[in-house]
Amino acid sequence: MTIRPHTKRRTGCLRCKERRVKCDEQKPDCSNCRHRSSRCQYPALRTHVDTDSDQCDKTRQGKHQGSTSPSPESILSKPTQRRSLQNPAGGADHVVSWVSAADRSRELHLIYFWCTRTCHSFTSKHANVFRDHAMEQAKTHSYVMDAILALTAAQVASETPPSEERNSQVHAALQYHTNAISELHAEMDSCAQSGADTIFVASILTMACAVVLPFLQSPSTGDSTPATEVLLHIHGFMKGLGSIVDLSAQSLREGACRQLFGESSIAEDLVMSTEDMLSLQRLQDLNEAHRIEDEQLWTTYKNAITELRLGFSFNRLRAMRWVISVGRAFVDQVQKGEPLALLISLHWAVLLCRLHEMWWAQYVGQHLLAELSHHPAVQGSSSRDILQWAMSHIQPTQM
Image 1 (tube, helix red, strand yellow):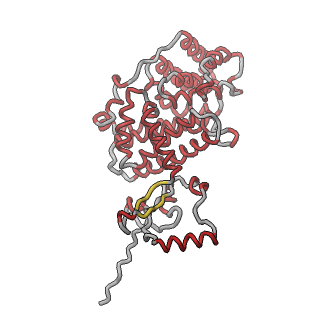
Image 2: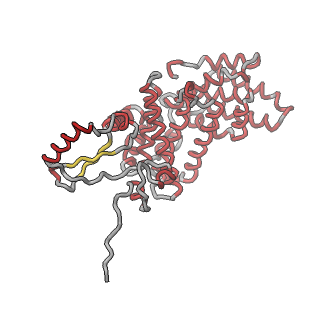
Image 3: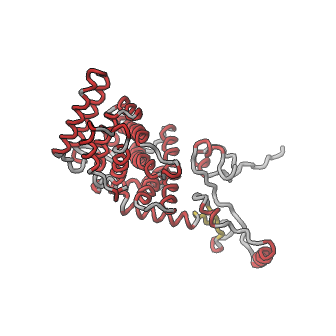
């Protein structure tokens, strides 16, 4: 009997190997990775060690045929590109692979920035959860690392004046964020046993990045998103995060993220000023006109104003949950450009601006303030006092 040769190939991409599925080995991205919108990487290929004569021959050929080395542009255009180097000390079978120099330099900078700055994005009190626990999980879960790099690149971009460097950081943040979202969804869909803590931390990071990225896009390129659309975007992400908490509440309260839950975990309470109370009262007075015209709409607005009062006088957790508590009916009114819905949202923008240490929330708040306060639908004598109060919170240095 003829023994069939072993035909199993070991040159498939790393993602397919990890998932234990067949890879069609298409380059640069296999069909599995394209379908899942995942980062496709191939293991370094084994190569023979060049002899002195081989190297001389290649040198002579290069003089006549020109260099075949990749240009810097081709390297930078593929941030996940890998290269291999034969290590003479390790023998012919020892291969070292590494990222491109530009990509490695950027990611090292981002990791340093994360450990010293971005891990404090959810107050310094909880920095250890994100700096230590998240980094530990990033060792074995690529979507956590992508989420870390995405939010960090977004913060670097937010602090960089308009320039090619800023555009580069925004582009990197978008790439990392897309990878993180795709891999996180795949992890949740496959019911993988990553642990509620890991998925929760990654979800918080992707949520923060998702709400700030639309405001980092350049209006000149047509990539920016209107504030009314962004509010729907934020509503969806916050609702998704709330669902994760509801499904895994017990596990989260007992795991590494336990300090994020409970009243004792919440940072200093927010204080409502006299001016805040007057502005909220003006909203309530404006809403009374809807009671006769549309009682259902009146109820929707009344609930949103009540939740605002709790946000202004309670704590930052309540402030962040406002966009969920108002419900989809209210968000729909914002999308329609209804004046009172926009004025109510303007108050939430002011509330976001007061969430100290949460740079991403303040960044979003400042941009919402600037855009909503100039919306044609809110220009009028009935809203003049509210607009004056809101615009006093605009700080151009945070935009």
